[in-house]
Image 1 (spheres, rainbow, N blue to C red):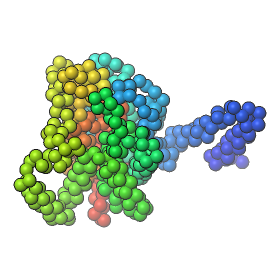
Image 2 (image 1 turned 90 degrees about the vertical axis):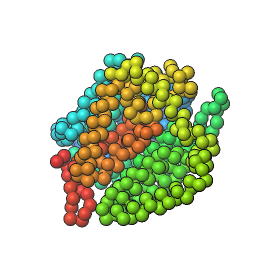
Image 3 (image 1 turned 90 degrees about the horizontal axis):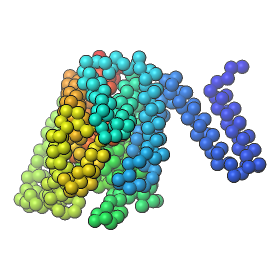
Image 4 (image 1 turned 60 degrees about the vertical axis):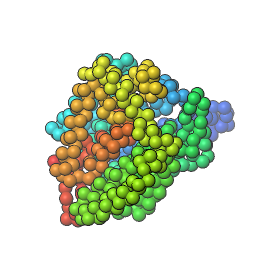
Length: 459
């Protein structure tokens, strides 16, 4: 009789049960070791399936990657940048997805080698090159590797599987992430609430940070979930009618609880733009824009100061005009760029460089709070130019093929990049993944149902 995977699982489970029973009887203090057995077995079968390009195993690996990308399971000081168990888990995860993607490189190499994606390939190579000038070459190389792993994993996924399956996996992971964060917010306030320092005093705010570590990260994950749900709502509804309402409810609640304005506005702008530029909805879009202009005009008589105070958290108008102190960071970053304009200070090195110039900035910060300034600081004009060319390539492809998904992904990276460093500060995050999706998404083609379906190869 030939043993199948099911037989192996049953035999392994029986073996583990026998071992657990024996230890419980003769050495109860060592019983905790047995807890690792199911985890090791599950990891083995998961990797085995992913290496064999099995759909469910690979998509579950994607589920874990999206969930753990921003997950934080410990509290540590703001200045603490040491490698701990959580960082190790994320690095191991990126090594795993990169290794699996490289094992199947033949399936996606044509996609990334397309002339449109040449700037992106050069950009990824340049990130590694900047380790030569970095104050911490190892940190730069590891951070650059996570960006590389994110892009090639995206390319591998879209070369092998249906985009609808990929996006629904992402949404399920983000929805679970938001649900866990909301539970943690109420169950463990010291952990689930956003904590900040003011005049060397620690404050626990009412903003949701959940298991994302900060309110801004939590808002970014939730906003990405809203954007993907809006872009793929029709396909999700065909799969299961509960996916869209569950995602909108949990991601929307998490986003509002973070009290982060930029991600909320960003998500609404992307979805509105996709809605408006659809020819059938042009008149509805123009009507919505007209209503918005009328409302804004009606508020003008109350004065500019009133409007600024209304959208600021503290009620201080200067909070809005200075982008919450970001203008001071930008000014200091531009001065630092002048010292090393060509190669920058090394990718992800802002966590080492900017704290040394706290006096110039006025307060502690670890990144430039703007994606282009961040790349100028860490990768120089060469890296920033290659990134800009990558953006242009994706934009041209989105325009030519009228691709709302690629547009939405790149808009997410760029709009977040106005006030944040988007996906290019340290380890890869959800914005890096959006960049990878935009670059590796296959070219769409129109079907007779007048909606987009995606080819498996790049046209």
